[in-house]
Length: 357
Image (cartoon, rainbow, N blue to C red):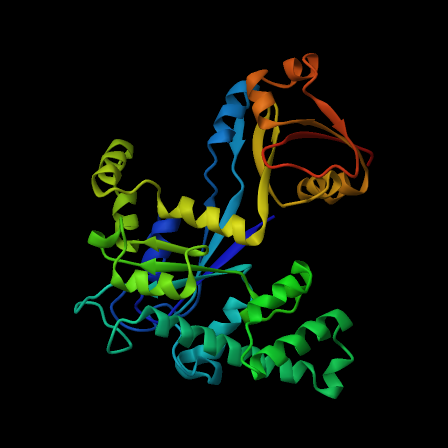
């Protein structure tokens, strides 16, 4: 499963700087003027997982393959984007293609970096972006619900469109629809307002440990559950250091984890994802699946034939695999299980699939 997260926000809030830090590249142009990014930049990043190396060592694997996540740096949106302001329609279409939205929020004061607004107000800035996405959804819904177009839309999607329209027209909380409809159907609707969201408060260096008044006002309004406080500038600086310097610098400024790890954790949580492994002499590999996936569905991540011809899965939990030092001892000590089609895969399971082609 390839996960794609789009970084959105007003111009000059630090989106490209964060993108470069997350992807450890200078792929995205970061400049002190609006719309320096026009076409979206895409970076594919290996998902860090300490368990992989331990498994590979036990299995004496020739290769270690991480699962990946893609970050998309989308150009800055402005008020009126849904009507085409600042090339807004083009940029909004890029957001439709991602699985989750990373809202980059300016939470720093700087006379050196232009601000499209006269003051720093993270709550107002998010509301501008959310309003533009909602207006774009409104136009899309109205077109799709027109009599001539409606016959080409699945009935379950029509229900989502109608409910979303009712929420927008009556100023109701759209996020509540996530409790009423299947997650896959919500994704298929293509509505921007229904996409899972992570909020990143971009702070200056001195605020990286405890945040500042701007980030606190944002958290007071939107809560901590899906919010991270990160300094994109600091993340970029960390990437330029070697391993020992990086560790010392992070300790000095009181930073426990890199922004990449924190963002991936949040993304996995809001999208309901987990990881299972395959491990043997050739390779140890991580695979991303939806929580509550059955064994055949997990097998389908490797190849569709594995799902179609699924017989059973040899299964060992991560802790048992490590304690017993691999497949052989796990089987000898009764820690390997043969699981069937109804088995719900658990995070960290090591699986070996038996199937017919």
